[in-house]
Length: 79
Image: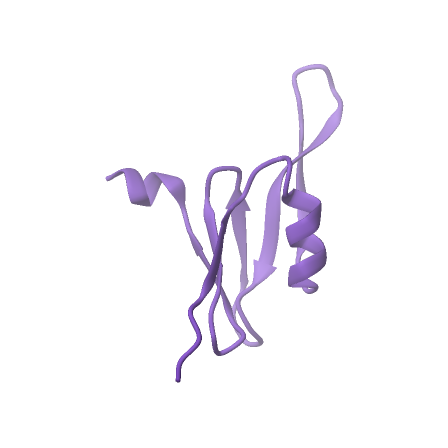
């Protein structure tokens, strides 16, 4: 029996919960127009040997049954 992948659309509300769940990710920040540093997504390793992927707000993060993580960027889905 194969388990189903778990999916989340990244939002400001679930950013820190997903960051904690992923474990090997980090919050991605930017400087806004007022000069403040604000979070705008997560960078995650899908698994060892691959570069980090930047998941922005609106992107779908999936935890695969094999333990890896994938990111579907929102602009790719909109095409």
